[in-house]
Image 1 (cartoon, protein in one colour):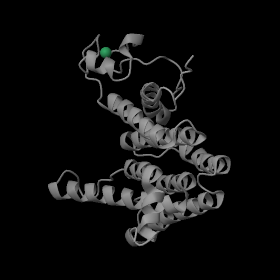
Image 2 (image 1 turned 180 degrees about the vertical axis):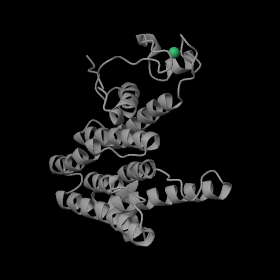
Image 3 (image 1 turned 180 degrees about the horizontal axis):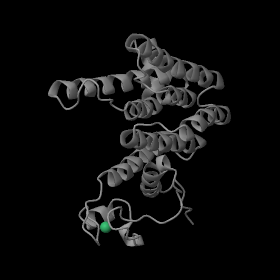
Image 4 (image 1 turned 90 degrees about the horizontal axis):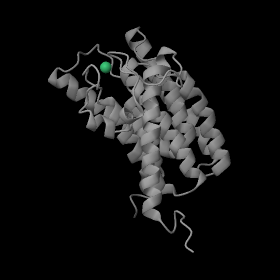
Length: 265
Ligand SMILES: [Zn+2]
């Protein structure tokens, strides 16, 4: 008898991981919507913000329900934010990447927790312009515990990552306050930087910071140039830093080692 395991049935395992990721993404949508408002994540069940009708289970299936309803509430016809299917799809896709990279290991579990936290933080920062301490602070601790447990990143690299990630943003915040005399950046980015460092270790963190600052800076420049935003409009940096964290998780160590080895020479 063939026992179905990830090794004997790799496609099935991957499909299962994607479905699991879509379901987790659906929960992250609830976190993004409710956590900043201090509402319970568990009760009541999801309802339309327009008419308050509780969603039936078949109207609450990740991605498929959005497509079946053509993006509108069944009862009142109010448009459903495209944030919902986007968060679900991104979570499913990133879980698949993590599975392909780490397979059925503790590293996969750590990666799933890390990317779940990053996606929630991105959504909350984009919507509410805050990075919640209730995710980032336990995240710093979780990163160190994960490094002790799996040793994919050594505990020393993890602790150095916290110091570098937190330190870089602390310097930016202090510098900005000195130059402008105003508090333009909050400490949320400092704690998120420290959390990235804890999970990634200082080497992959450097690449994550590079990617985050490059993508965030590029988009901010483009928006300024086309007049989409004014110079004073704050652009939430969390989603870019989180994107850097994802890239750092999958490719950071390799890129930094390739760089340190003189580009593979
Ligand atoms: Zn409605």
